[in-house]
Image 1 (tube, rainbow, N blue to C red):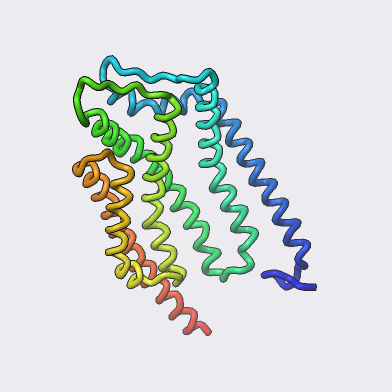
Image 2 (cartoon, rainbow, N blue to C red):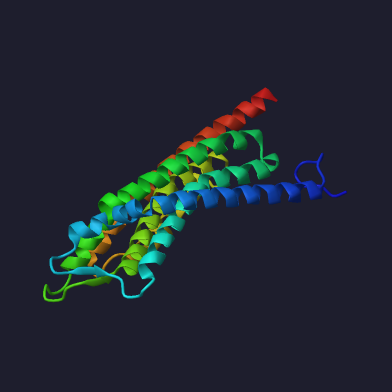
Amino acid sequence: MTTLSDPKRPVLDHFLELGLRLKRCLIYFVIACAIGYVLNSELVRWILGPLKEQLPKNAALVYTKPFEKIWVYIRVSIYFGFLFASPLCLLEAFHFVNPAFKKRVNTHFFWLLLASTMAFSIGIYTGKEFALPAILRAVFSFGSDDVLPFLTLSSYVNSAAGILLACAIFCEIPIIMFFLGLWGFVSVETWRKGRRLAIVANAILSAFLSPPDPLSMLVLMVPIFFIYEGGVLLAALGCRLSGKARANDIVSN
């Protein structure tokens, strides 16, 4: 019978294991969403914090549809469930595919999971405390003071969630670059050669995410640039450690 990565197990066993792990991931997600639903008032209040600090006087935050507020609270609960169930789901995925990888890669995966979780959390915190207030400040200060914002709850939560997610993903970039170099998948020279492309992509992304003025675009571009350069340094470190590990493997063999 044809087998997958583990020669001792048939294909059917792999599919059964996959189904079991998918069920576990669904359970993790449902439990995390339930916790988020219990905490949704605090979570929405946390997301609204930067807006309340920057919202001009006489401006309002409203909802215009009967069920809009309810759906926003449910959506925030789902966001919470997705974020907090993701590490456990990734762990389940790792246990499923781990026979296909070398022992050295398996050992590093736990460090990758820990580092990426911390980087994601740092990105969310940085976005909420720095990026989101700066963007709101730039938006509200743009144009005439005679035009006041009349924001809906749904539109703000969607925009804020997108900004926080973008900040979290940006903080993940150096971690990913380090482990790709550590595993020998991407060399540091590749990242260095892609610097110009990264700058162009940075400019396009910053122009898309920032308000329509050069200063806000520059404020967003500079941190992303330093994040990429920090990732290049970490990739160089990962490649160096990968070279030493390979040399030790050759010596031991």
